[in-house]
Length: 340
Figure 1 (cartoon, helix red, strand yellow):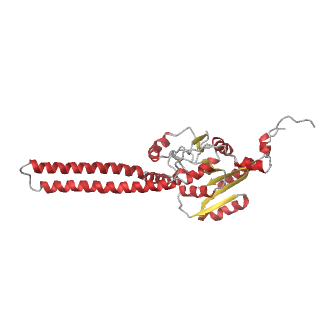
Figure 2 (cartoon, rainbow, N blue to C red):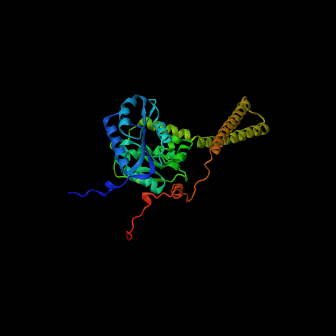
Figure 3 (cartoon, rainbow, N blue to C red):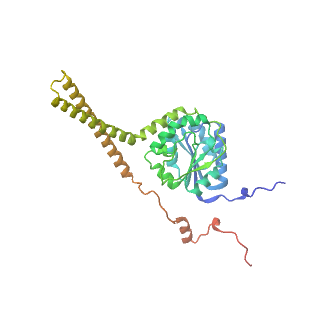
């Protein structure tokens, strides 16, 4: 007779609330079975947990029996065609857990979910699932997104897993980001948001290099839009150069008028118009770009977020337990039995 594993008798943790969110689900039996497995896995490790599902309005009826069957499962219905990144933001905003996983169901089925959560809690970092072995085709198709992501200040790699585990405080910072849709998928390069990787050797068979081309196009557009401050800086520099060239050209025309006795018919008016046009276009574009940059900086300044890090020794939960004279079972250390 095989001796049961000691982990089967381990009491679920009661000092933490866990939220697991899914925003891209198909209404089929395999999805429902996988969600039941996720719920059972969480129940063995945590007493307090919730599962958040974001589905299309056309899938609502199909998911209602699952909601009735699985406790602490919340269903949010959105319009058909809502972007994938917007769905992740909706799920993250509704989560109430101390640890939040925004995941892909196929990926969560392949990784150790409890170890994934434990890693994020232990390291206190934004944790992404990562598979070291990459296909060359994926790397080739991903390099434009990686380059744009670095320019925009994000850790972008479309070949990375979509699942992310985040402590509550860092999730609030991600949601307060200028572009939370990108921040929840590709964490920003920010000292307040340390990033760590949960390595796995498992692969998701459903993912291919050409999967989700529409989503790739949305990502490319979003990155280009977020690069607006950088693009405006380039426009301001080029406009300044154009203005200086126009002024130099105008000075050259004046010098030609003074020094040259005879000019070709129409030469003066043509070149004068070119110089005036260059100066006007340069100054106009420079003014517009500087004005837009000023507005963007004012908007970011109003949001604050200047302090890069905080170090403290606050433990409010332990303090409340001490004030109430409550001793948690998790705090009781086993030791030698005393005399009767």
